[in-house]
Image (cartoon, rainbow, N blue to C red; front, side, top):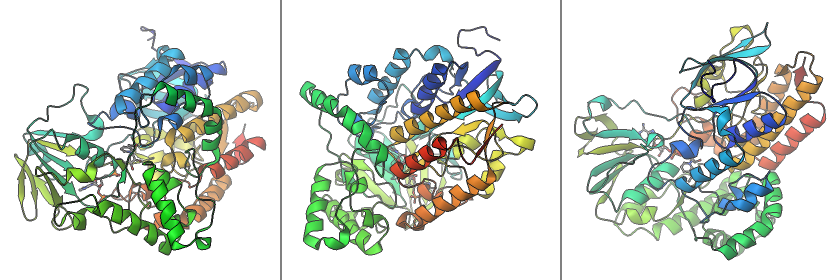
Length: 538
Ligand code: N01
């Protein structure tokens, strides 16, 4: 033990799992409290989502000016974004820049995956083990695993027989893959599938897109930023940093101020056109609030979006397959750069799995109910076991040996997504029943959660006799009820998607994310201002 400079001491104040946005910030904040803190990261470097998702075309759907840390003037001053929606390489580079500036690397054990954590009541601490045989004891344990880190790999029959390359987008090799001239199959058309398909369509020989549910696509507007643009944006950082905090979705825009019922159809159309022209998620998070809860309002907006999509498709029959029937915004709508136009190409073929599902993989490709597709490469853009998957991949046992994954196998509940009753001193970010699980510009929500958690730990350090904090069952139940009341009133609750846990077989159904970033923040601030009401400190 303690052989390398990154090896943690065996007894720690805090352990942070994951070195993405949340993990890096948590290490910085907890070290700032004077705690002895250490991070474990499964990857070889920092970046989290932006380390793992290096598939062709990966980039943010959030504008760079709101996809960054707000707490440090120095970081804001010294980092120069090159475009409005930065690509994976740039976002990963940004997080490396942050890790270096804050001197966080020596605090992290890389290539070290936490596999188990057990609450030790006698020691009032967590006993944590990793796949590299590290074993440490820590008073606090923080999950900073991100909402979308556990890949969903559907058990396609016979996939092990396939002789070509078979991989999930979030496990793309660092050196890339030679796609030139190859016969490639992409399964899945969510935000990831969209980016892969639009990027590789012109590189591959033949591209077969295996689609089950079509996706909405908002044409992205992604200008390169000039020095003048950056100067103008920097001048607004203070204002933008405040706006993201209390918005609906953690972006620097909010829903339309005028109620739907007080506008005419023509006025609404003008608003839709204006939002669409921005080429960003303002089309979704800056639209009329009614479209999230009122079917008739949602139908009108959905039809507008369908029109926009149809106008981009030229092949006969393509629109019928590619234009969604479900309501816009009830699943996460991706931004795209030529996704729909890719289907106008002769080498891109849509395979409609609703007509004929995948039966199996063969040695040479994919077989559906009515055809066989010879392929060199199969790309799974099949998504993630969101919000719970990565946490449940760790064997976490709380008081009396209770297993977290067994609880969540029955019902997914938390106290504000920050703690779970029965798991003292275990804090979660991007966990269910908080906006960071899905319905948020994620860095906004992760920063808020890390700040709340670190302030809470500082409070417990000062006020707890044993320095132990745990959400009460009563508080957790109250939050779950409130969460269900808020989210159950939306159209999202009625639609199958990863947002409702419906993409994973057997996963208990619940809208995973709390809806309304600003309201969530107010709830969190209220709890803290009352001495962490709803949490027992001992
Ligand atoms: O995953 P998804 P994702 N057979 O779950 C299909 C964020 N993100 O990785 O809907 C056939 O959305 C599935 O079909 P269906 C963003 O928040 C952000 O694309 O289950 N198909 C669906 O089409 C996003 O929402 C960015 O019928 C199967 C697809 O696979 C989230 O990550 C970029 C299947 C999965 O779509 C997740 O997006 C990328 C099966 N057995 C991602 N199983 C940016 O910010 C699944 N599918 C830019």
